[in-house]
Length: 305
Ligand code: 0GY
Image (cartoon, rainbow, N blue to C red; front, side):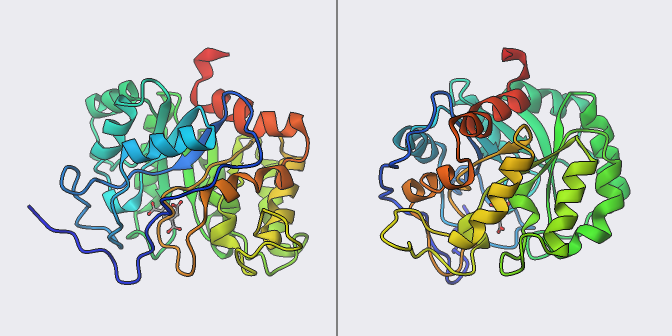
């Protein structure tokens, strides 16, 4: 059995999250989280760019219950490459409370797609963040997108804001619903109405099939996790970006914890505090209901109506 040694400087997820003060609406979905291993059962991929600490399905489901979520969307993490076994195992043991986003290669068979669908996978993730993955040719990704479109799945895209101009033509040709991870990773030290974020707004405005996860203030923040004025929430510099998306595209935004928070460098968030960020970006009950319940359920459990 391979012993996996964590990437030097790796920050483990936080084991004692507080109870959020914000009470999540009934049926809320944590629409972006991962499972890692455990590596003795589900080894990490040889092509991975980092080696994390384990983060099991039982630990994820315990966090879900502690925070007050009803369901999870588990997203295949790059440390597992295109080996979706840990994801499928978590989905099939969730009692119907989780659906997922997988990673597949061009060589995936229809039978494999069928078993991913049966397990609850409803999307594939295309990752363009260079520190996380090797390059995959666009024609291969487009071929995968065309195949998964037949299953009613969507494509999740992860990229850095500076790369959007170059990726624009490819993204706008995708034949499915397209869900952007972490608001397209804006540089939040730039103005919320500056050219970089305006391009992302234009991307969503001109393409009604594009959704965004208004996630990862802890990853995008420049000012850091300190709360101001005795408030419980933090990440003030990210609020204008996420709030603008929620206000403008209220039917196409979803939210998630990003637990177990891979590759954070300077701090590990308390997931209870992260939940307390939500009412600052979705400021009415109606917006909160859409962000946390209606939108993710429409995307991942469309049959429930
Ligand atoms: C995230 C963000 C990151 C990593 C991954 O699949 C992954 O490895 O998604 C990151 O390092 O920015 O969404 O969890």
